[in-house]
Image (tube, rainbow, N blue to C red; front, side):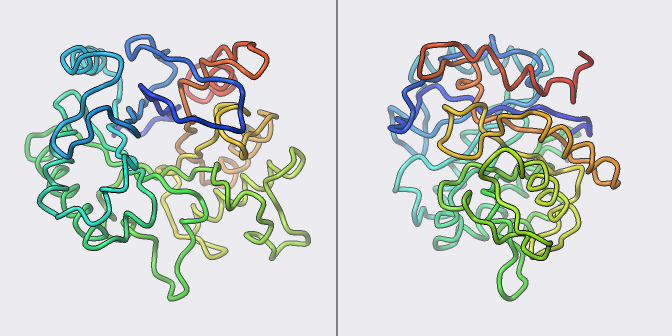
Length: 311
């Protein structure tokens, strides 16, 4: 994957019900996703045809879907197939079935995959080793054809802490030298009130409230880039900061003051560890509306497109 600053966004063709929000995401045609999103993670958390061998989109035919994917690919847009948690049947998938599923999903229009699985699925049965082995096969296959295939690993930021034995999180060690991006996501319900990650400073730093968020974001990314404060070490030019597109997208983790994000990124740059970019959850929410029916009008994209596009 070409090493340039990126603005990544997750895209869904069906949405999860979020009882805490009365706003709503918007359906966005794949071909209408603004070019400022130079990496698109095409996500299929729910399928109307649950099958290991086939995915049928909700709002278009399979043929229409892949035609749009192919058109974007021809335009040079970077598309990842986001492998998320479809249903409970992912637990204990036989390795041969898992391989068939991943290979099926990697249509010729996709030049990357984002592994966005919950930790209990990653660690169930043989998945800890089987999925990395399959991804290595795919990457090596494309390499032999002189084509690039990108691997993105997506984690809730708390899952990027090393284990008590110092062991790196699942997949990081197995895919060292193979993965291209690691997205550290800041929208996990059980973690965002914690103030213990950085308590070696004069005062602990939490993510709730606007005032401390710049420091929180800086020290989180600094910890990952340098492998300090208990976090795994990830090359800074492969690090992506995952944020909610707006308050409606997730219950916690939204950064209402964009200067907190931009200042943290500038501090990382000055310290010699500039991160690769940002990721929005989701493009659909960025194009959606709030609880009062007011459109978000791609607020996230417009706030941060300057990291990739001169404004």
